[in-house]
Amino acid sequence: MDVNLSTKAKITWCPGCPNGGILVAFRQAITDLVNDGKLKTENIVALGGIGCHGKITDYLNLNTFTSLHGRVIPTMEGVKVANPTLTIVGFSGDGDSYSEGVGHLVHAARRNADINLFIHDNQIFALTTGQATPTSPIGFKGKSTPFGSIEPPFNPLLFMLSAGATFVARSYALDIAKTKDVMKAAIAHKGFSFVDIIQPCITFYDTRDYFKDRVYWINENEPKDNLAHAMEKVQGDGSDKVPLGIFYRVEHPTFEEQLYA
Ligand code: SF4
Image (tube, rainbow, N blue to C red; front, top):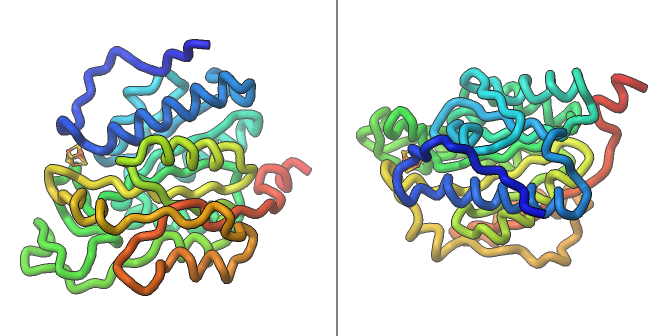
């Protein structure tokens, strides 16, 4: 069945921005899930935060909502609590949810809200033209760190595992096929699904060449239900390589199940 997820809105991302890869992957994921009879488009709510990523809701022919800066997660939780039958997908950025909204992130993970969060992680505040975020590397030079950042970045996957997220994954925006697969698995998971998607900002921090040589997919047969193993895997192999894949997936009662029990 042809699922029309496009809108008439003009795409205003910089030409070639890898946000487009995330958009295409998500449209493909939803199309597959609808065609497989697992989802109905009218039951999906897609929400965005503030940042370049937030434009994605304009480009999706779904029920959509744009929240305040750093507040996409509580908005997602509110929609889910109001109507637990809906499938909630939120798009956010590293500035939006690792900086402003980090408090909401940790609580959504620990209470296992049944929502899906896809982070467009470009390691900067891109909409405001290039300030450091919690995932910017040491030495990053931008508008707020002209002499180079002296703050070590945090590992959002390790953070989410520690906080109790029941689905933790990382993908790469320029690998659309794999990103689609990870998104489908995240949406199929019952509980808090967290996916960090590395998304180079080609205008203010072009990391395409850096990641091209460093990203790798972990073996699909790695155990997914072992927290200690996942915590080890998300930290890579001790080199500067960057692991991708689904690291952790376990079933626990969701917040909404317990709320309405
Ligand atoms: Fe994409 Fe960066 Fe342009 Fe924003 S500023 S649209 S993240 S390339």
